[in-house]
Length: 158
Image 1: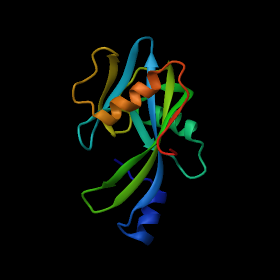
Image 2: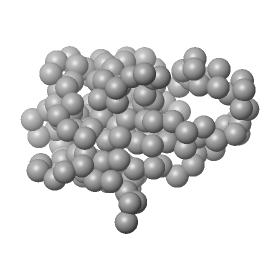
Image 3: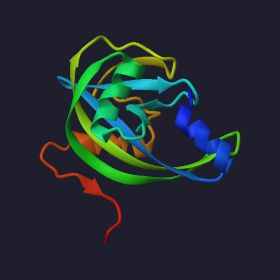
């Protein structure tokens, strides 16, 4: 996965210390099907995910990542879930804390394909037959986005 230039610049100053970043998850629906991709770095099936660029609106990041990673044009229809992902330590020692914003998205056009190499496979899945390897966290993101009339969920703030 390509590391954004601004993250490389930050890393040149902070080394492997934790970076706080905002990420997005695009839960893309087309009829009764969900778009998933198999990540090239760890082989996990996930909705489309990515990092919000500096100054970028999060909903725009979800749309951009969908086009960049899967070659599909989407529109965001609602914010479904805001949550902090537990700290990730990468193989090189870099640490990252991601605030994830999960969006429900509607497919507009394009046939999915692994557009930028971040995915090895992408495709539509029936909602009733999602891959068994899908993590609990990704299942929660999908469930939040599928909830038709629920307001966005927020973790914490109890």
